[in-house]
Image 1 (cartoon, rainbow over the protein chains, first blue to last red):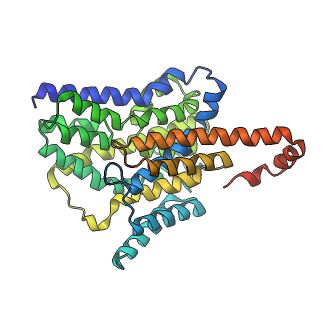
Image 2: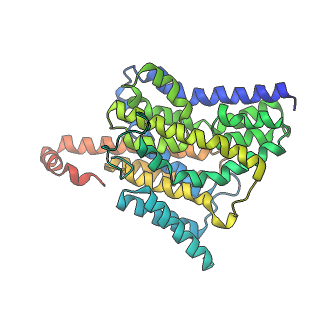
Image 3: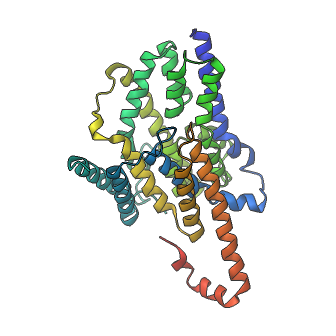
Length: 107
Length: 258
């Protein structure tokens, strides 16, 4: 691949990525939106984050869903600790300890 | 609800940097190291010139999309490579939509600049602070975004040199998932939000076989629709039963899940 083609590809993806990230914020943040859209926007956060968590947990593409018991248990424990202690460091630490322990036990 | 345990009284570093952002980003940065190294290593093996491949870090700043662009280069047509890399980032439209109401109270320069830093981690952490005062949110968001940006660039560069030195047995790739799971739970405050999250997770699981992470979009849309329907059902019940309205008003805090 030539340098020119490679640069064109990189810049194209950079511009498109920025557009995806900025489009609604730049174009609609200051404008009143229809009520149903405002209502729907309240659920974008929890919905997309939950979907992304599932995607990360089970993988994507042809091999999905790839369910590994130790990882699912670790994710559940880590998430629960994060929620109960309102502290992500604790949740992360607990989840990883559970993961390494279960993996060491061959689960 | 804030995500860190640090109280707001701590003064910013250098008069600007919000140390809560560093505290919150801290656990996610080690988790990003293996992936950054993979991206860096891929730069050295790409059909692209190495420096152009690495330039995806400062210009695109989106790990999965960078990896697709770098690894597919030379194996498909130019437009196919570009399209594949772009499709992976379509979920960012939903991040933009979710944060748009928060940015309503931000200055124009912030609305233009901030989206560049809107990676998964920044979205997940900053959405928890959507109710913060505008100035506080701005400081937190920028501190968070700049932190991830300044770590990502050298990490991918180091990856070009050292390659995959973090053992796979450490399974650090699971760490972000653990954190996102906690963030989802922390962000659910009302029943419809819980309905949206559960529906999204289930539909996301069912559609996980789709390529290019499109399952995230499918699950997200399903969750949003479910959340809106749940809210309308609850409102409808409240309007039909005034006594229930009084009861619900008195116990509104009990309907919150956190």
